[in-house]
Image (cartoon, rainbow, N blue to C red; front, side):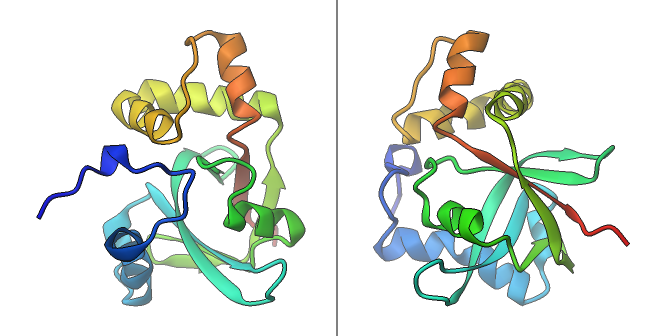
Length: 164
């Protein structure tokens, strides 16, 4: 059996086998195997804005800013993604990268910051960036103005360690 992951429309909630595949990283983190995910993914614990339930969502890291210590993530499916909307209602309870878990300080990036970080992501991961945009049904002309406009549809959040 084979899957064409590139044809999955990320604007829709995953179902069936694909949903189970996407949940594999959560199990790796629970089994203390988060180090296998490297620094490319972060596990976010967040509370449902309506249900009050605790959810865990693995998200790809767009950038780890080693100067500020921030991990930047993008809501590739847009501002209506449940996990993103939950985080706009109430900050994350915890995040985990590799096997390190902490209660983060969270901030929403400006549209300009998101545009700048996406440009860096495109430069570092051109194939992944193209697949991400294709799966979202997004395209832009490659200009700074086009990237800035697209950043409104792909908001970003920064997570860092709480100050001591």
